[in-house]
Image (tube, rainbow, N blue to C red):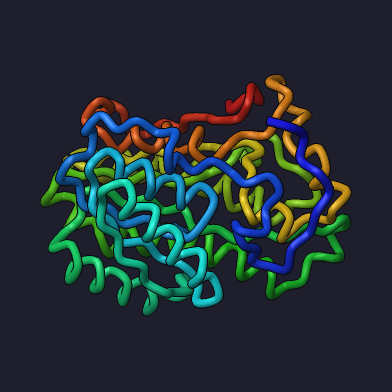
Amino acid sequence: MSEIPAQEQEWPGTTAALDPRPDHGETSWVGRDRLVGKRVLVTGGDSGIGRAVAVTFAHEGATLVLTHLPEEADDARETVAAVEAAGGRAVAVAADLRTHAAVVEVVERVRGELGGLDVLVSNAAFQMTHDRLEDFPPEQVERTFATNVFATFWLVRELARDLEESRGSVVVTTSVQAYQPAEHLLDYAATKAALTNLVVNLAQELGPRGVRVNAVAPGPIWTPLIPATMPAEKVEGFGTQTPLGRVGQPVEVAAAFVFLASDEASYVSGTVLGVTGGKPVF
């Protein structure tokens, strides 16, 4: 893939405006029936990693509910169309998961649409960059923690019974930022470290109930979040600082989610799988 050119978008960003267009697995992914019959909730499923997870899971036979912010409805419709083109079914639900009440509404919608749940993919996230500690607005810090950490906690809490009944699994999106935090992502990096700790704890809590809990830690991945939250000069060449020398594609991250959600990972729990282009995750 060629180097990423300088570009910016208004938050939350759209897939259509990305240059170059990212690969979500629409045509590149080859399904092997690894998730046939699985009922899946993907938060933040409108674009980026969430879209790639939805598309690859559809190729593997899953049925999905995906959440998105109201302002991301166009991207969500594209994701649903891509899922259907892959032979799957998805229902898009507009939701801002920063409150417990919103999470409960989504959980009830999931039960109504799917009749239960086999896999929870907690992927929705918020980030915004600043150069100095004093530049981080209090409302942003609160939003980052509410979206990234609190929503994950509440989702697992509310869906624990469903996942126990299906002997299902949870896969959380963390980040290489949990291990190599960047100063301009101060609050975001802290939430990803918190999620890593939460995953390890939840695996101990839910393991005796037959529920596996894991995480995927992406490195620099080409999604709308990048030009929508970073200045153009930091977007240019994004990902070239990795040992592999390039940005990652969303479908390359989704491969890790497919593995962790599948029966192939039946003895994998409490782990973080890095998809970082060579950056260490430890």
